[in-house]
Length: 67
Image (cartoon, rainbow, N blue to C red; front, side, top):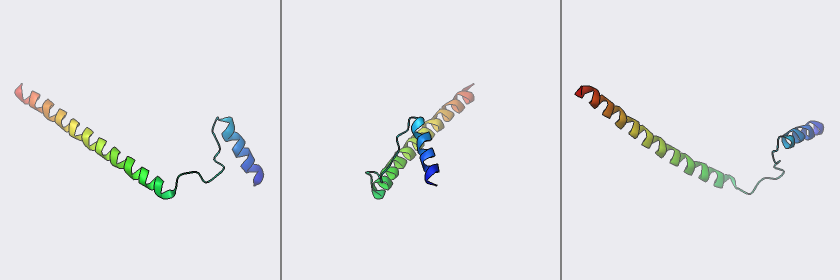
């Protein structure tokens, strides 16, 4: 098993990736907080895009009706 771990590590390093050999610096709670914050931003952006698309569709429909 140790041999396979070394082989996989070598493959990852050949692809220019850095190996994480420790637990990292960010706590689980910090990661959850950040992901929640980013998802909230994403949802707001999606709502704004939907609103803009709805307005464009309405404008197109109004133009069609005027013809």
